[in-house]
Image 1 (cartoon, one colour):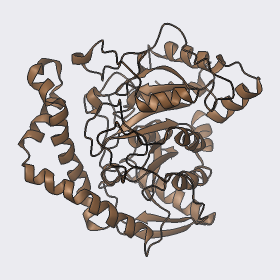
Image 2 (cartoon, one colour):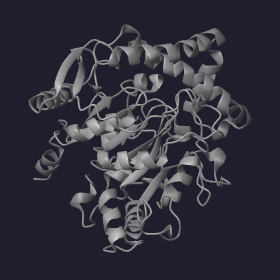
Image 3 (cartoon, rainbow, N blue to C red):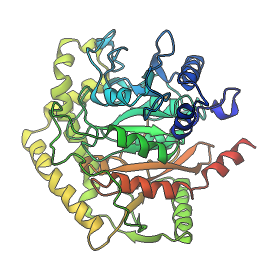
Image 4 (tube, one colour):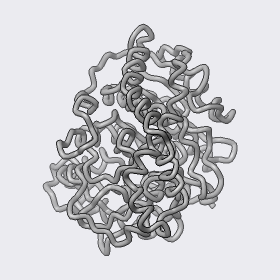
Length: 451
């Protein structure tokens, strides 16, 4: 059963840029699109299950219409604190939890004028136990995880922007599965104060939208370092997000994907896109990744298991019946891992990131890599949210990554393409991604699918 909103009676929400233009000019009332989003969220719950909490009425942020996000409805993943709504981490152990204050990123959004309409479904603690959210294109398939509800809410046309988090592939993969734009910034670009940690060495706050321009606009409003965030070094934070405007489009394609084998349809989609980019003036270079990059998915899992054991171990010991088998298993793995293994991976993480930066921007002089965001189409069923191995290397290295929809696979479900850039080059990567987005053929693919 397909449920994509553009084929239903309710019109999908416009882009941020369109909402801002209409609200600022007075063409649309401040509450107009917030109310539309809220009503669409409520109406979709019986089928899409994207939200775990919606307030009793549309929560309009009464700000000056000139505010950067005035009138813009935003959804927030339920591992990110909201003072006026529960934040429960999809956990029985935290049922009814009410944070005392907004997470840093939520406070920034509200200060810019955004209206937070509700909390979106996450896997438990942003790990493997999924919620009830389905893929908006076909409810027999997963939307991906762990930011399941945020991806689905944007893909269904309910909100133009949603927050997620990524510790392995929890923004990029669901965005690809749901046919939208997903962005994971440089590590530390968005402060994580008030965001539930899973693995502080890897956790990133990211976002979903229907177009790259909206991501770039929102990023400029929420980028920053918070001194209260205990886990981000100011050296690793993204101090430079403004586009440098080099004007080059030199893109690397991989002879071998970092996450392993991909489906033929996914490879064909990447090949078609690369060929189109070359026709439109990009220089496409086939490259071999440094051998150590192929080790990063395993490194990331080890870091995550140890840090999850530290964060969630006490809860597992105290109330194991309230914690999923998946999280209990992750904590157990972390406790078994020798301290020397964890320490050696931590010691290698930043040097590897520096070597990758030198490889990407040095003699190769690449503006980005064009890589797979996943094996291909989303898996059938809701129990498994997909393989994160195609995103984990870039999360481990802390570099920015963005995925854009490029077409459909043999099951009629979306396929994406991921662009990976240099650390602190977030705005440059998004500028390139916007150029790529215009050449994916996605609108034509959507129109063809509806025929």
